[in-house]
Length: 344
Image (cartoon, rainbow, N blue to C red):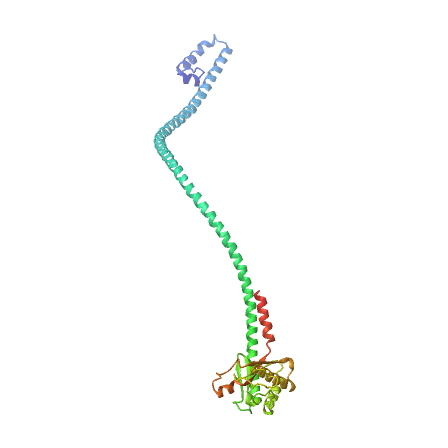
């Protein structure tokens, strides 16, 4: 009732009452003035219009009401689903909360255990860190040593290369020297080929050419003067030596162990005899054209025998003069001096 009083504020006359009013109109015409009739007609029309408007409004309101009812039903269904979802969500929440509590408890336990483990690990870490620092220090020392070793190795490599060059030069110089000695021996042997091998021998020893001349070829017993045949051999040798200007000459006189005869002029012993014979031969070589500065004379006496002085044959072998021919080794000495300087 309240809703209709709000929706329909104007009272609407029923059709019966309206008909009665219309039937009574002729009888009332005489007593009702025209003005009042017009007012009544206007009111009747207004009422009819109001009724039509009210019916239209009722239809619109009814439609809205139905729509509102449908929406309300939908809302109730939604509410029911929300209630159901809320229940499920609540259950899930409670389960999640319980799981969270369990996890939190486990976490606390793990955290306590982790603190203990962390303390242990921290101690281990400190040990490892100290060991690592020590090893890094050792590594630094090793690296420094390695750098020094590398520098030393580089220096040694450079020195080795220099030495290899010098060794090559030395090897070549030695080969050249050996070749020169061989050539010298061949030349001397060829020049003295006419002499008896028992009186004159040419041989190589210690990189030198030894020309050994017997006393029989050069001297009479106890004499320091060279016989003509010996002089001929020395002249031929001097001819070869004039061509070989890079050869030094050492003349060594040798005797047996038989003492010289007393009273021999200017001689005290075999040493004097060997020295004077060597000097005489050196003088003959220089007279024949060999430069004196290349010649050295020395007497060895009886002290360097080639055989025991126990027989006439051996004693004859020991009474000899040896002319030692040595190629000058200036180039070789330069290389050796260079090596010595490089090694300091």
